[in-house]
Length: 225
Image (cartoon, rainbow, N blue to C red; front, top):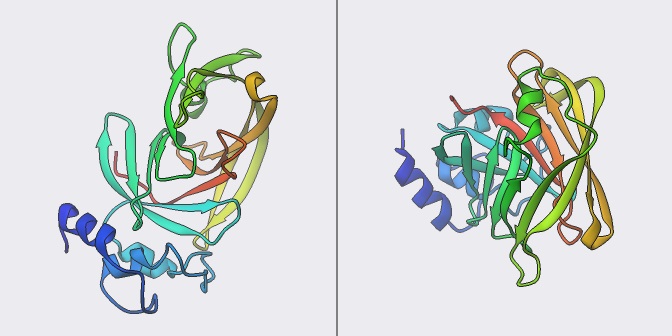
């Protein structure tokens, strides 16, 4: 089995070529970036091939485009750093997208500004109640005039839903976050599908600015935390 360092070096350095049914594990992951899905999983790889990848994996689709696979690179506290074959980086915390690198307009930072300084979603994942009507965070984007942008959020319980990922059904509780950005005169509804047993976010659809399409994230192989 490849160690993590060698795997990631191979992942970021490989050219995209060949078919997804052949080659080494890094080859298979690299091919997920540009090829159209040909499998029932919605990704260029089968569920079996994704399962063979020796690290936690995150499925990503941008604005409904073909799905790609990101591999867990590092864990810092509760933050997970995911890397794609074309060197795009996502950082998540309890399913929330905190930072990006390599997109058209990157998310640089996310800060919650209430007394606890914590994401209300974390308490919901632990089985806690929905937060008060309005909670606030500030975000920085990779643009000189887009720092400290205020986001006002309220949360709604979307009820129970059965979702399917790589052919496996998951019974989930959907939580909707309605986020308002007054500076942009823009509102978005983010969604999180949560496992009520352990609080894992199996799927989410998140959008942090109008210029970046909705990002669909799916837990393909969970991280061992």
